[in-house]
Image (cartoon, rainbow over all chains, first blue to last red; front, top):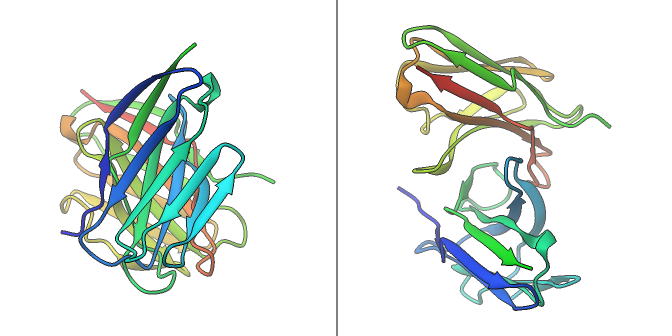
Length: 113
Length: 113
């Protein structure tokens, strides 16, 4: 079936180091969303990317959508302990917002103070 | 504003029993999703509704699972009979069909003994 591959599965960093997670699909994506789930919590929406090559920033977080709309990345600059959690990409395969979002396996980030 | 409300938050039951999970989406949202989360399989989309109509139930594991949305403010996910492998956190999420951003409930943690 349709899959969205996300790497790495786990990442341990020292506070202040940078962090990147990657999301890849063999299928062209309509759009991609990113979510963060704190331990014991529920996924919380971060951002949506729609356009080819799009780059969006939220403070220390930078989100990119590939030119071919088959991959995306989330980069965190100078991680803090509050960044701990699992980051998921979620891809919409069908054109427009028909609703079907396929989640990647997630990257769990641990930050050592 | 109230978010997505799920009940129960925790359920422990014995194999063979019927389980009913409930969800109240955010008022005004016209899409509703049921996801299941496990360590092994991550976040899996079970079924989603647009305007109370089931659109895609291809993720429902088998006939033991059923979901209904009798009106815009209520949905249920039923498992009958339950099995230990159904143990997971079940999330309900809702969104506006036009935007696609998912708002998740806090989840129902199901343990089947």
